[in-house]
Every structure is written in C-alpha cells, then in structure tokens.
Length: 308
Image 1: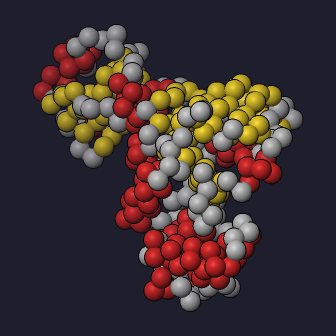
Image 2: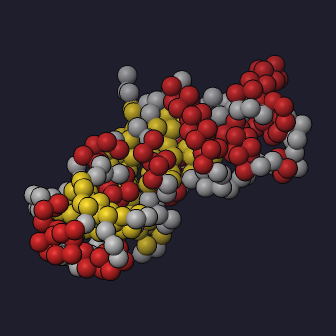
C-alpha cells in the first residue's frame, strides 16, 4: 500500500517562454500538512493547479491519491477539496444554503446531506449564524465557511491557496488548529503561504523562488542545515552599523528588529561573536549573541542575492 498521497516527478510548466515551475520533484505522505512558501509569482498556485489536473504539465508526471494526473483528473475531483485565496462562495445565499449547495454538487443523498451540513456548522462554529447571508460575514467567519464548504464531502486531499491572507492573527491561529484536526483524521493538506509563521506550522515544506524549489524538508531540518550562524547585535546607531556590516563578504544579510540587528554570518566564520568586532571596531562595546535560526532566516539564505 502506497503511504504517499502525492508523487510529482520532474514537473515543469511553461507559458510561452516563461517557466512558471521548473523541474519540481515532490513526495507528500498521507495525512501530513505540506506547505509551499514563497513570494507572489514564484509558482505556488501553478503547482497546485497541476497537482489537481486544472493545468497540464509541460513535462513530468504526477500521481495523486493513486491516480495519474491529468489523465484521471475527473476521478480525482470528488476526492479533493480546494479553498482559494478569494472568497468564492455565493454572497446572497446563507451559510447553510452554501453548504447544502456544495453537498449537492458532490452528489450526497438528502439524508446524508442534512446530517453533514449540521455537523459542519457545529464543527466550524457557524451553527448560530446558519441563516446569515455569506456577504454579511466577517473575514474570519467567511474563512470558516469556506473551509467547511471545501471539506463538506470529507476529501482525502485538501488544497489551500493562501487561505489566511485576509484574516487577523487570532482567526489564523484558530484556522490552523482546524487544519491539524483534519490532518489527525487522515486528510492530506497542501497549503501555499507567504507567512513565515504559517510555514513553520507545516509538517514539511518547500521554499520556492522563480518556479524552482530552493529547499525542501521539515522546518526544523531546514533550520538545522543552514550554512549561516544567526547573530544578534544590540548597539547604538543601528542603521549606520547595518550599512557597514552588510559590506562584509561573510555576511549573508542584516535586518533591524527593533533595538537590535539580526545578522546572518557564513559558517566559514568559526566565532562570529569574536570576529565581528575585529572587522568593525565600534562593535567592541556592543552586545553580540548567537540566536536560534528562524524560517525567515532559511528563506533569506536560500533565495535571491545578498539581502540588504
């Protein structure tokens, strides 16, 4: 029995001369949350559309839930849920009517449909607002309705395309708790995001840039494999210090965080705390400490050129 929900091999997609996705290889185990992290236009959404059969790859092969895509895309349709960044349900229908409509689309018998709609209303905290029109809901409520609709048919695979871009941090946190509940029940989830904190919640993720996967693995393994040491500096005149530090060839990036600078120094430098004052003497009176890496540090080190 195959324990992988998705296997993509040498997957590429071109639009004319433009390469949207370049030679992507991907294996996603069943029941996990897999993230695609990257800026707008890096190929995240194009990848999702190829995995669902909405786009035909230029080259490569895709197997999703044991089905060959895009050849068996129609068979896959009933086994996946898709939640887009833009709210796409019917604004003039009530919450309950939207869910009933989605259940009909997936061919549920009436008795099962009514039971499932009630179950979703309760699960996503919408039962007290079931008669409200979707157009009257807040961003967080719309998000919960969209997730309830995408999972009404209990899909084996759930695809979420930047689903939390229009909600506040509290609703985002609650949304992710619901995703972990689904994952625990065996649903495989693919999510695209440009939020670092969201990507860190995924079981595994790919960091994409310009259609290419620059790094792939668990958040912890990606942070552990970084080729830099993260150093934080507390000192006066941070803007001037940053301008000097970023000129050092061994420094990958420097960014100000409040009253400190966060500096990524190549691991070729064995003792960055002792080394930095030898390069910039004014740092002899600064507080310099080694810091725990973050996923943002990983992103900076594996994408683009030196960041200033």
